[in-house]
Structure formats: structure tokens, C-alpha cells
Amino acid sequence: MATKVFIVFYSTYGHIYKMAQSVKEGVDSVEGCEGILYQVAETLPDEVLEKMHAAPKPDVPVLDPKDLPDADGILFGFPTRFGMMCAQMKAMFDATGGLWMAGKLVGKPAGCFTSTASQGSGQETTIMTAVTQLTHHGMIYVPVGYTFGAGLYDTETVRGGAPWGAGCIAGADGSRCPSKLELDHAKHQGQYFAEKAKLLKK
Ligand SMILES: Cc1cc2nc3c(=O)[nH]c(=O)nc-3n(C[C@H](O)[C@H](O)[C@H](O)COP(=O)(O)O)c2cc1C
Image (cartoon, rainbow, N blue to C red):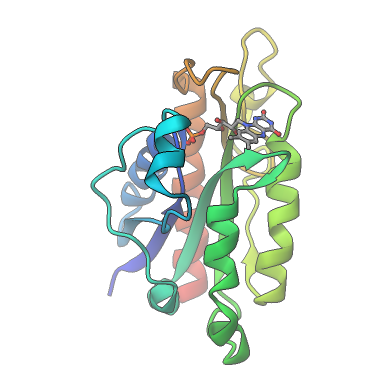
């Protein structure tokens, strides 16, 4: 049976969705692994999303948190809000109390990727603070480390991403698209993570 890696994301403006698609490419590149995209439920009303100029929601199923135990591993993607995960993703975690009580996610590998408007404004803290959620569930946090190689040492270009996980820089007005380097890092994270999830499943 295939190793199922859920890629559970939230995206207001589409950057994290783009990153999630690259993460899936990386997962699918590993023999016997399948990346399955889910978006988490929106918590903001339509009027607010309209005022925020939010992008239309992608054609991706909305996760029912009760389905998380079906995954062999989970990669969570979320944009930063003041240096931490967005409330929509936190609301998803807040809906996992029953799973926590029954220990349904214990021992499952998990990793994170993120997006910030600018550099030095949450790439690392957003993922670091998310590790508390994984820890309380007894999940095994799988950071990507420096396994991406030279790309992570690049100082010539604006780039997101850290040993904590892939990341992109969206720009203060959201106009910057994830760069090739950032998308390649996301793909690499998907591949690296899937290899570890496959081993753990064995
Ligand atoms: C309420 C709010 C708080 C934010 N806080 C930060 C922040 O602390 N640092 C930062 O770089 N960007 C911040 N941003 C920008 C978002 O992180 C950015 O829009 C997001 O990464 C784009 O990803 P998306 O297109 O997937 O929604 C904030 C945005 C909002 C709406």
C-alpha cells in the first residue's frame, strides 16, 4: 500500500497553495508515495475576505480533521500571522482534541512549510512555534535541515526557507510569486519527507 502523505495547507493569497503543489510533486516523486492535498476550513466571513482581496479558494478538498489518522505522514503549510501560524490552521489543530485523547497521531511524522511577506519576519518562528502542536500530539517532527544543499546558503537573492522547512517571500503587497529556488526547496522537502515517512511506515 502506498505511503500516504497529507499536505494540509491554508492560503489566503495563493503563495502557500503554490508551495503545496511543489511539495506534492516532491512527495509523488518517491516510489510508493502519494501526496494528497487538503486545505483547511476558512474561518473568516466572505465580506472580510473580500476586503482583504483574498484569492478565490483552490479546487482542493477541505480537510475533516477526523481524517488525519489516515495519513502516514503530514506536511502542514501555513502563512505567518505576526510570526506564528495563521488562525485558520490553529483552528484546525484546535479541532483535534478527540484525536489527541485517543493518541491517534502519536508517532506519525510531520513537517511544516511557510510564507511571509518579507525577510526576517517569521520564516523561522512560524514553524518553530508550530512544533508545539506536533509535540503535544506525539508526532515526530521532521525538519528539512540543510539537506537542500547550496540553495539554502544562497545570499545573492531574496529567498524564504530555512532548516525548519521551505518558505517563500510574498512581498508586503503579496505581489511576489514564489521563486524557482523556493519552489525547488518545497519540492525537495516533499521528497525528503516522503522518504522518511516511507521508512517509518515500514
Ligand atoms: C494579519 C496578518 C498578519 C501578518 N503577519 C505577518 C508577519 O508577521 N510577517 C510577515 O512577513 N508577513 C505577515 N503577513 C503577511 C502574510 O504572511 C502573507 O500575506 C502570506 O505569507 C501570503 O501567503 P498566502 O498567499 O498563502 O496567503 C501577515 C498578514 C496578515 C493578514
